Length: 222
Length: 264
View (tube, rainbow over the protein chains, first blue to last red):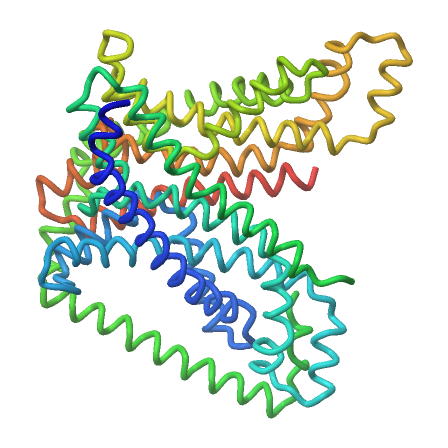
């Protein structure tokens, strides 16, 4: 217990990194995922095909491999630098990897949300003269979003836990700190593990409650 | 087409316009691919020395096949143990006794909300301090996979049993069965049949998660590919593409299996 208290500043700093990774990747994957979902229902075969291939690849590849590919492949081998500062560069590379992976799941959730929107909604929009893009952006996607708030919440909670894997890109977030502390304070291993686990519970529990509340509030009554 | 409700069935002009736009998109995609190609070229990623090792039999026999065996070994051990864990805790959570139900629910909720990597780290780096022995990377990975996925499977089992019509257990009780018999002979067999697609999907998750073993030095596919092949031939990108391809192939076949089981 003393170790956790003594190191509370470094632990908080590590969790702050976890929060930042989560926030940036959540935002990125929501945007990219929405775009992919729109592509997957578009009338253009090439657009649909490209999104299909992307989602299949991203969903079926282990996140560890995705992150190693962004870090070693895109970062080191292809020389993509996003910042001169190594730590900042690694942070952004990790965000790219997490976003690329999570967006595929956001896309799948939204696509199943689109299935819950009754045909009449799109038909009514079309009879008002709206084209494909407007029907999607103004009528069906907003309703799809409201239908999948709860699954999106699960995806975001999974993302929070997945940020631990960013350590393979060299980002020192919570899991790195926990490993270091286990090695330094060998006599307090269980406390350290429970402390870090509690940290993740504290992050994920409010998210779960928030998304649960939102999904009830935003549900479309039919 | 399932989403055709989003747009009118195009007429002759619409079809033409869609074809033109589709071609335009194809051009943009090809341009993007070309940019990637040029970047690869600049960094000499197309060098034959980086790609040809992937075709060599000795590379497959030293790295890829042992790696695949490691991945499948951890995943299959993990899924068997996680299945048993899930069955035990899923049914325990539906117990009539509060002193069984509450602890089971706590365990399930706890392991579901802790990142898998923390569980693996705890087992691998903490085992000496807690148990007095160092456990192998394999054991640590299987420990994490079992507890995390077992908790998810426990929830799948519970949902499967709860989704059965009440008449099933009522009829079983009416025939004079005891609680254990009702669960074992009537509810679980039906629930497991209904859960099979979800279980296969969870196996895909578990298989992908087994790649975390690389972080504690377990010899699985991603490790053998990126730390084995790429260390010898400095070909991170080709190796990563090959490994990703193998994972995608396995997962897509499992996915198809899940669909087929779902239709039955």
